Image (cartoon, rainbow, N blue to C red; front, side, top):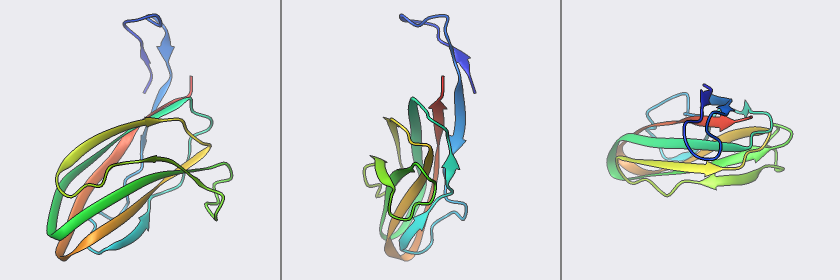
Length: 130
């Protein structure tokens, strides 16, 4: 959602921010493995800011690694590149990353752990196309 900047040299300028969500559609994670979130076309954003919030983590040695990948084509067949990487989560935590975008983005989740594994998280944020 857009907003008007209140302070600094850009005060009074409208920022056309757009809310986005990249969370994996079938949460919580209950098995180890590599999973991919939905591909979202975001145009040509100047900046993307995402917040990863792990709200629950259970089992033996639960881990969650999230990489944000970008693609010019949206195919993600080898031409993608890494745009940002969150620090590994091993329990309840929240992290924020800001980075330059690509026309298409998706989240890659690598889940580790065993013994009643359950990890719940949200991945959402805003992109600036202004």
